[in-house]
Amino acid sequence: MMGFIRGFCFCFFLIFLLFFYSLFLPGLIVCGTLCVCLVIVLWGIRLLLQRKKKLVSTSKNGKNQMVIAFFHPYCNAGGGGERVLWCALRALQKKYPEAVYVVYTGDVNVNGQQILEGAFRRFNIRLIHPVQFVFLRKRYLVEDSLYPHFTLLGQSLGSIFLGWEALMQCVPDVYIDSMGYTFTLPLFKYIGGCQVGSYVHYPTISTDMLSVVKNQNIGFNNAAIITRNPFLSKVKLIYYYLFAFIYGLVGSCSDVVMVNSSWTLNHILSLWKVGNCTNIVYPPCDVQTFLDIPLHEKKMTPGHLLVSVGQFRPEKNHPLQIRAFAKLLNKKMVESPSSLKLVLIGGCRNKDDELRVNQLRRLSEDLGVQEYVEFKINIPFDELKNYLSEATIGLHTMWNEHFGIGVVECMAAGTIILAHNSGGPKLDIVVPHEGDITGFLAESEEDYAETIAHILSMSAEKRLQIRKSARASVSRFSDQEFEVTFLSSVEKLFK
Image (cartoon, rainbow, N blue to C red):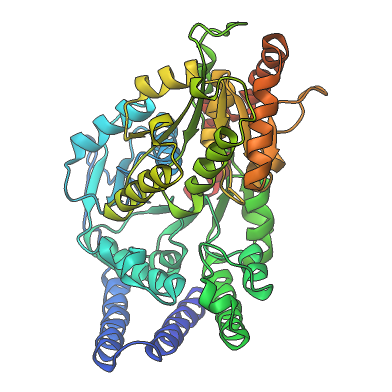
């Protein structure tokens, strides 16, 4: 009875969100959306009554097998979130080898074998047992480019319809959202009748985002036209508070919640209020592979390499890296600036990411540093290792990065990390180890330039001491630690 009431509440709030969004959409689209919403509710009742799996699999002894599904529309993207997906699947396959494993993905331009080969190439991860892929055709519904205004709301509503497409193809026993599409949780729990869990990399909305709008600060999610207009700022703030309330409501439907850092934990506890089933599960970082890279007191190659590792998304703030690097060169803060090189390594998920890379190339040209800046897109794992083995400094510039797998990898590889003074890097990663510093933090363009100059001015012996301390601190982020904490957290879903 309680499940029915909560399911009814979910449908009510879905209709409320559609009505709110309808104020800003053409009438025809609104009518079509409301009709689709009605169809979803009606078909949901039918699905509850029939409760048949779209994907039926039987074991050798004729018994039905448990179906465990992960919702990860961009499973072929090659970022830190994808590494979590493959390590989670591998961990579950070790413990529950008889289960059927399904991944809902929108990567329709590749086949399942290519996706698995990409996971091995980028992360050095091979699954123990086969996995079935359910290919979704409506992934465009969660693309931010489809919603120039009220993007958070548009993408969240889009994820519901994308989740419906997934549910109609396969009704699992256990559903895990591993990419942050929280609005799919009530759909699978109350309509699909599944046990549901979520691994939260980054809250869709956070109190930090609310403060940016409230204080009228410019950010990648707060345009200048809004910050300059008090009325628009108030409207956006109301919209954010309403969205945060709904986000908390749908998030509380999760039976198990895993977060990737202390920073994410604080926000999720504040918004979802499900502390009794929420745990920190640090993302798996392939630290051993990077720890195998030999540490040399003196570099084997002349000059210094600065390396950035991260997907080319707007929040990663790659322009800050290029501007700080240009300031470093133009102000001649270091000796022999011509011996420096900045290499930006990352994955491109779509055309928007490719466009961002082109804009970054133009920025380096405008600042006159293009000959010192290189871009490496979707490179193999071995090539990434080679760059990190040669780099002196690893750069990270995202404000309130939820965790920072790239930061851990840089530290394990022996580079001196320079990360943003916020989020996961500040709270969980770049922290003292046995009283010794493990890296550096910065915020502004000037801070980054000055800190880079400071690191390069150190003696090789001093840098080596920092690198050793950083390496000694990263074992808590290993694949093995992830498997233990992940399996312990999701155990409730299988009882």
